Image 1 (cartoon, rainbow, N blue to C red):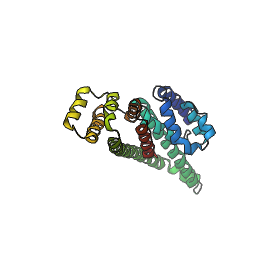
Image 2 (image 1 turned 90 degrees about the vertical axis):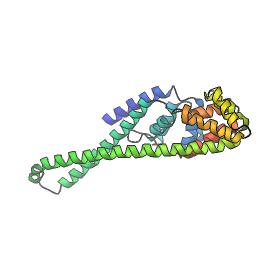
Image 3 (image 1 turned 45 degrees about the vertical axis):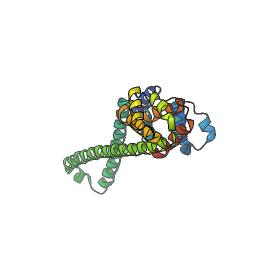
Image 4 (image 1 turned 135 degrees about the vertical axis):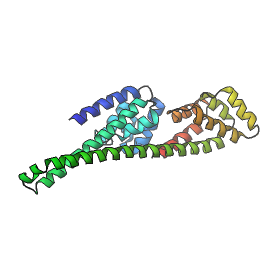
Length: 250
């Protein structure tokens, strides 16, 4: 019961924050990403906001109080809000601890059936000490698991950036100037890059986009890049970027 209450509160806070980040374009990206789980074009067509998407994922058992992977994925990739990212992470660790305690208690109960009450009473102190030790080990394991996940996400992010830089710099041509302007790269840096590589559009675009990613981007860099390509009237590259981003997360 307590877990369900925490889950409801987390989801309400998640939706409250998400409304500032999830626009129509991002919602369409999420619908494409979860289409294989929803497996119904009729259901997909009726999803007009994030709340409805989450409800459908709950019905498909892709989201529940024990599994919040969709919230983790959305917060890490589309919500530039450190506080909600921490709350989602902490909830996941809490769920792991609850699941561990349930399995531990079941094991203890099963083990206890093989011994008499006198034996169990004489070992209460020993069992409590052991349980505390195991609990501590579990917390350390959870922390290590979180660090490993974070490291893997960082590596995946770096690989995606390199893939996008490679594909876009080959195809964007003279549109790179308009694109990086929409990414708030200062005009003097745009001119400097063009003067540095006066006859090489590919090198110009590569360096400009790399400059954005390394110096001017934030947690929403993927969405900002897609929007900039759209504003620069490069729908082909916008769709290519969306495809590459979705593939990197699958």
